[in-house]
Amino acid sequence: MTITKAKKDELLAKYTKDLSGAKTAVIVQQKGIPVNIANKIRMEIKTNDGEMNIIKKRIFLRALKDAGLEDVKVETLEGPVFALYSHENEFGPLKVINKYLKEFKKENKGSAFSFIGWWFEKKRQGHDYVDELANVPTKEELIAKLCYLFNYPLQSFACVLSEIAKKNGGVEEVKEATVTQGGEKKPEAKVEEVKAEVKTEEVKEKVKEATVPQSGEPKSEEPKAEETPAA
Image (cartoon, rainbow, N blue to C red; front, top):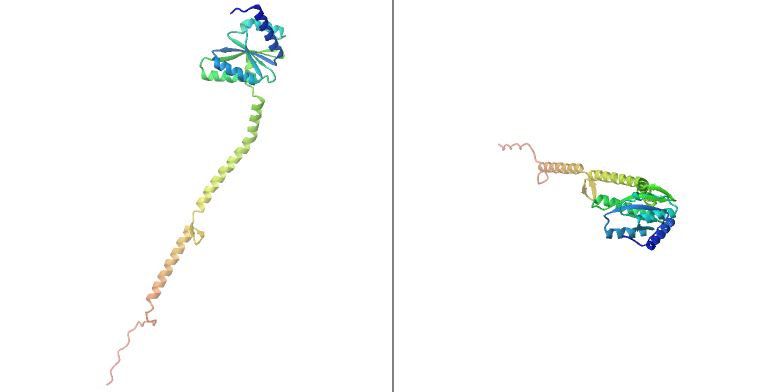
């Protein structure tokens, strides 16, 4: 689509201003991004102190020179591209694009992002350098990992103590499998001994009763001799 010279000058001024005022600038190639997803990404980038703008390639290359940045050849900007600017948080907008880049690869539905180049402090780096930066953990992520490393030994020690307590508790339950009698716990073996003693006493009592007459006098084992009548 042909645009007027006035519009070109307006875009050139805007690109130059954006490049001069940004901490970093990244050129991102896009492919098959739905409009609703593109709008969602734009809002996330804005939340992370960044800005995303579709660019006119040749006007953007002129803006690079006007902003004092190292320029690139127009052939480098292949396909639909946009400029990603960051202000205070130079890695925030880059992380947003990298997150969706990984999601698109996982879903494999034809949508894709790829980094073309990056300008920081007027120095340009290639796409490999940008890929590495995009995958570097943020400060918050590093702090979270450090806290996890500090807590992991304590959590492991607590789990070990818990398992030991469970095992000891199981052993004690087996040892304390006893019969309660008279409010006191006595082992089952002791109970059997008590029952045997009771039976022995009962037998002794029965034998004793069998040898004592009901009148209370002992019985004579020999019969009395018959008396001889008097002559």
